Amino acid sequence: MIVLGIESSCDETAVALVKDKKEVLSSIVASQIDVHKEFGGVVPEVASRIHVENISYCIEAALKEANCTMEDVDVVAVTKGPGLIGCLHVGVQAAKALAFAYHKPLVPVHHLAAHIYANELVVEMKYPLLALVVSGGNTELVYMKDETSFEILGETQDDAIGEAYDKVARVLGLGYPGGPKIDKMAKEGKPVYELAKPKTQGRYDFSFSGLKSSVLQFTKRMERQGQTYDLNDLACSFQECALDEIFSRIHFALDDHPEIEHFVVGGGVSANSRLREKVEELKKEYPNITFTVPPMSCCTDNAGMIAVAGTIAYRSGRRADDSLTADASWEI
Ligand code: KG4
Image (cartoon, rainbow, N blue to C red; front, side, top):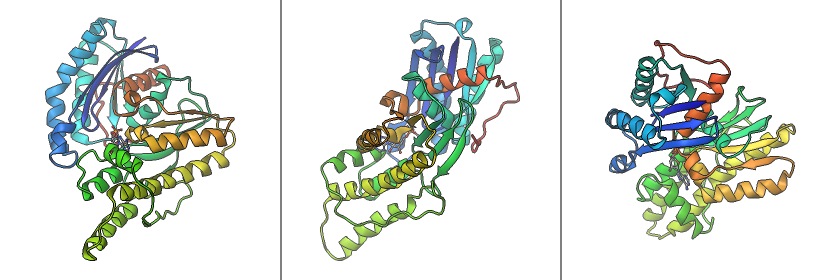
């Protein structure tokens, strides 16, 4: 079964063709990072307009790269939400047009679920499963007792972790996106500065906005006092605090749910080298659990993961008709 996936929830226009949930026949990603860099973050209105410019080209390029026509496609899958509403509408309208012009089933996909299912591209996922989704818009711990059930154990109470990386990078004058830059600098630094530890109510919830403010206050205090500080050390101190927050919750969840067989990660922040190191450490602590951190091409926003999620949803019977519309805050 060949599924054509379309993703446009944030600042990547992406189209991919995936065969039988495993074989990526093509994957086109048109990134807008260079445009949004100038503004220090994604500007929703600008992002929607660029999706409109890019979407037809991406569809054509994905079909061409896969050496397919729409006749070869069995299902059209698209991100319905969550995401930026104007951006989502572009992908949804394109998917509807394709599905109805070529008489193909149309399947709406949840962006967060797709980040989790991206792991299917590299490994057979086993259940019960715990997934950590960490990106510019999400920080969630999700428990899945089987392939199609999602229980959000914990989520961020304020900023997403990627958003915190990007905002801290802006404070430090590093540019957008800040995650990769902080990651690189932290490798050269030590966690010597004391920053405010995040505080949350829920056992599995996260919070990053206090930590982000703590970095800002630290730089202001040092400037006021005429003292210098080491940027690499500050990047490292921030990163250690942020990841401690994440990994303490993972420990709680794994200890509370001894039936978990598989732990997977998804989302752009899973590119982080320290996060990957910490997953390696977890592997030693929980030898009975399979741990998967997919390669970068599957972690950041792409349409291969939408096609995989579309395959699973299609097989479970999900369909949409021509009333399908985007939902910026669609619950999983
Ligand atoms: O999943 P993604 O491509 O887009 C969405 O937000 O949906 O994630 C982008 C986020 C950005 O916030 C970026 O700063 C962060 O992922 N990121 C990283 C790294 N690479 C990308 N954060 C920390 N370390 C990295 N190496």
